[in-house]
Image (cartoon, rainbow, N blue to C red; front, top):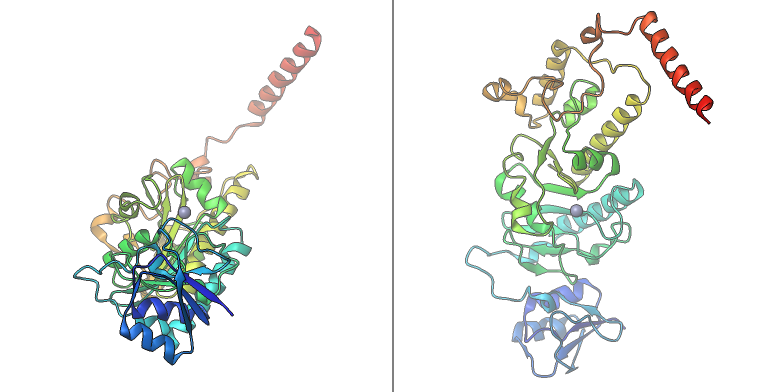
Length: 368
Ligand SMILES: [Zn+2]
């Protein structure tokens, strides 16, 4: 028997018991003095879920008791919805929603396996309706996600279905959905090599690897703000229309796409790109670049795929060269070969350098 603890609720409504059913409850524990709406009572009877009203009222901050699981309203989602929140909780239980939930769980495991998230870090969401977004819960490893762990929220972040409390970083996703109608899915994670760029305030250069140009192109970097706050969520607003991937300063990355799987692909493409650039920087040879002419071919492919790129806007192009090696802050690991012409060290220079190092070492040995 699985008991769901909803003793945090003073009023148990239909959506609360729907959440309990979705979590596989065969019994719900309510607070003694709470009110259960008739539709919630009918729903429980219909689904053979027992109701135990002997519970002691629990505050939202308290964890569920006796190993039972908390339910949606226990953390405040049963608060009256605002005027714009006409979210439909039924969307959380449709066949489409069930497929999306499975996809989110699969993507969560990919993120964890690739070490893009650690602890309970990272979050994933999908906009299933005009005012309905399925998202991951807080405090669950992305490896361990099950469809029952997910939640449904409206565009204001109010939880309308699901047993576990939604991620505290949902507002980042919601700002993207509100700003970019094409965005149907968002993935936020902390991949180490991309995050290394994010903590140095640098963006990777362009025109090095075709796949990166097509799927991501120019990466934006948003300023730091405390995670979970509205201010943090809004840091990406200046960038998300023209960029499907944003580095979050001192934090991680966020990607949006038409599907959850594609948003995760962008995280993979960016992370591998950053990693490859770092490896190449250790080889001691300059990185060669794709020509701007060939780069335009890649941009054409990108346009056909319907992916956003700031370089499509010619007015923005003036400020932003196709190759941004010259832009301050880009990680211009080494200048292009052509830019090195005449600047390469000569054999005489190298000999001089070797001699000065040798002299210094010999001097140090002699001084002992
Ligand atoms: Zn984060």
